[in-house]
Length: 147
Image 1 (spheres, one colour):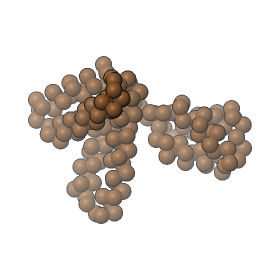
Image 2 (cartoon, one colour):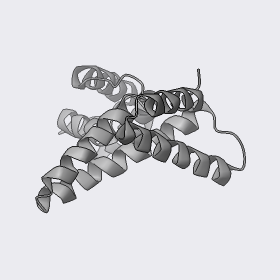
Image 3 (cartoon, one colour):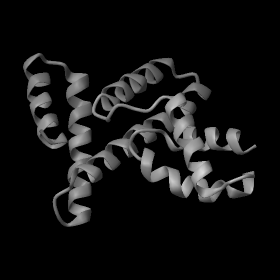
């Protein structure tokens, strides 16, 4: 079942149980998927859908810091709940240990020896972890291994 079909089914379910918060999050995500489809001028494949989903999660995670600084606890909790709902549609994320293992393999494969080789490592590693790991986490792990 594609993400769009799954979202439609879960939207219907949220309407039945009158879960307004979940319904709004799903509607927002479906809207963003539709905008992406219009921008692409064609249907989205699974990779495109995942990219939209990751972009939406990233937006909300970036907004978390702003809400924390402004001490808006109610909005902070609401945003965290949105992130949790949206993250449930993402594929299983890699843990730090798995990312570190992949990073070590990539470093050995490209022959990286210093932090100056960071670009080569990231270029080779990111396609393997795209959609399965946060880019900032991958970068931090690679920096640690090269530094």
